[in-house]
Length: 405
Image (tube, rainbow, N blue to C red):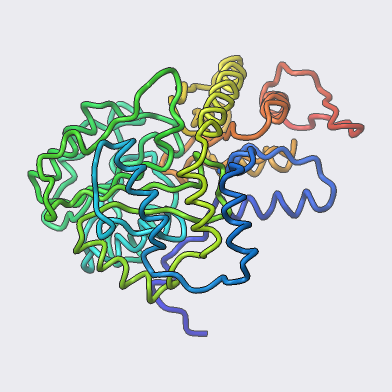
């Protein structure tokens, strides 16, 4: 069978693959604890549900404009003004099927074949594959000091004649790190100086802890004209716990948005009408669900970090945002894929291997589930890895005996 070279070059999503394995085990009645997830367990806001239901109940569920309905664009414009102190026009806005599609069509829009896209390590697993799909070359930049934030000089040193864009994701998936204000400000200036696109993936920027304020990239831009190469991406998936609705958006100059719209119209047409109306409800409705989720995640974060710090050999940096931690387990096993498979097989806990996020030896552990799952999942992990733990562990009525070193 003839499969294109491009298709052969794209890796299967490692997170989805492990999720599928865990789902199959759960269907067989296995007591799976999912600490690998990327979606909050709280319900979507009631305003989103009411809006979506009202639209569906009309029976008039039709195509929408490729760049989003007027009501959603107005809600995004208001959101951008409130949270970014930035007033944009409808022609600066495109609504997409999730933040992932917004980033994907942006990359299709700006990249020529072999153009390079720079992003810090660790990175969201989809960035390299998305860049390759758009014909570009991914260029991850790892901090020499082993931290989760490279220096601006390290980013600048990676810029070459084929560099077209930089992607920043803060708070960061998978590490939960919030990039410093100075770092983001200097990268904004670097992109303007070098005439590069800067894609700000702000998916998690309202899920930040410890009274840290999200950094507003627009405050450091000097080019506020329609020639600006700053693209800001967001979505309702994380902050409103609306992952299944698949609504995201991008703010960019009018020429870029027009091109993105043309591409999206050929890919998927417009986003789902009921989902867009749900997003309108979330953005325009009562906002206490966001703060409630943030506080719940901060509490879960504290519990998880406490458990991780109690394990000899595990090195963890306290996440400042998102709902992920990215501890270093290399003292136990350097191959993070093997370690993730081991934990799923032996104690039925699902975590994500760090190598797929650009840092071997680490595991991405999510704390967006229940506090009970977080505590029990960490108890199982510690039992599986700590040789000083008791030899037996009960999963419900099933007794496990550790028969490995």
